Image (tube, helix red, strand yellow):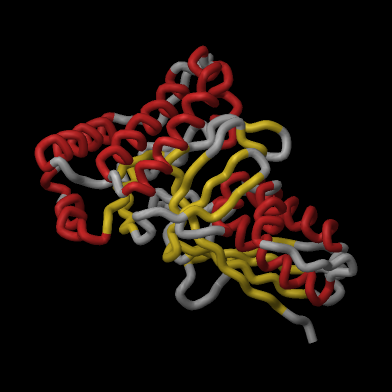
Length: 311
């Protein structure tokens, strides 16, 4: 009788971005992310008797939303599985099925959570079928996951994760329980993928000092979060967001994700902070949608941001 294994992993949102990478998905600068424990990817690996090769299919499981992967994305996912399979010398052939408990159109990148879940699930398979199995720490598993998707290494740690070069670790501060909200402003497929953006930003004249800026800003943000300085944390996240999108716009050739709706909404956030002296942390990934993080005592403010008529 064939066996199956199932594992999950959460998504994460970076406030200090890694922008630019070297071989092996090693970032050119450190990053700091908040782990979104309720936004999960799930992976089921099922042993298939008499199969000639491994394959990927959408996971059909109650409470989960099957994902649709392009042929390129399927190849990338299965390539990581083959890497893990070789690493542990796992025998046999398998069906890899994946899904999310959140919509792929909700503005959250599922690459981090899906590759982390695949790595965790492969580890469970290796315990039974791996001829070269050995126990690994979360740090070691994260390093393996990073080979498939750089940001997936941060999904092994919570409530925050700090990643610099080949080292990633859990991080804790005064704000360990935050409320997340994403403002969907454009659901169209991106013309420039995040992976391609990592390469193209290096052509910007502003990239030469990016590593130093990110190091300093990351250190300052950690200090602000540890001391409970929310307003200072907002300012640093705001600067970081614009730093990244300025790199996009000044690359050669230039590209961008910011649209008119995003700019209008960011202006609303700035006016809100100016008027109230308080508000959410704000960030954007390589896309047009805006991510907001609220303190637990800001539920009323979060409800205001849910009222689209205000902005």
